[in-house]
Length: 133
Length: 130
Image 1 (tube, helix red, strand yellow):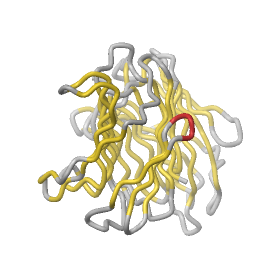
Image 2 (cartoon, helix red, strand yellow):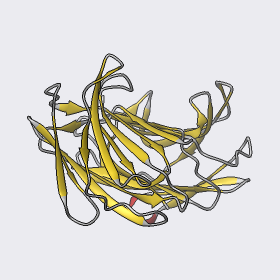
Image 3 (cartoon, one colour):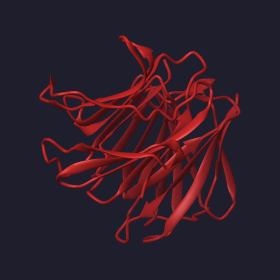
């Protein structure tokens, strides 16, 4: 499965994480996790084309020591199978801002008030490039 | 010392990895490692700024191969740079910031790179491959 795992990062509030890549033609769902490590995710973003009963929905959540929080759903869904896409993340102590293709934007609470991102994992999305500005 | 690690990459023969970043003002050196895991590297690329030398090597099952040294130094302390590495069937071709190219044999015959790490006094600001 197309993916990428980046660790030992040191991204601070105000910096932007950009992930550019291609949505596979047969994609049912893809995931981008950002956080402290695999057990403490500031944001789990799951774009579902057709997965677990959701169609064209972004499901977001977070974890604290592997325990999931409450899901948040976005109905904006600017992704297309087989197309390129870029997603950007920035954060401060209170929330994460997610910029989607086409200029759409939404926010998700930074529930643990994490002040650093050290871990990024991508699954089901063919990431071709990352930038940290 | 910082260590930046990327797993599950999918760089195929013919593809190029482009890396941008900043060399620390106090930098002594850094290394970029490309391969299958931290124990199996097709290319360990290690510019040593204080000695004005780039040391390249490979690693298999945690054992280093024999070093190759290049005296062309185009990395400078405190600078923003970009360079690229292209994977070929028989070699890695590294394009340095000043355009000079050095190559290193693809000793393990890798046709795919899945692992990259960056260690030392270099901060990656972006990477991409195609």
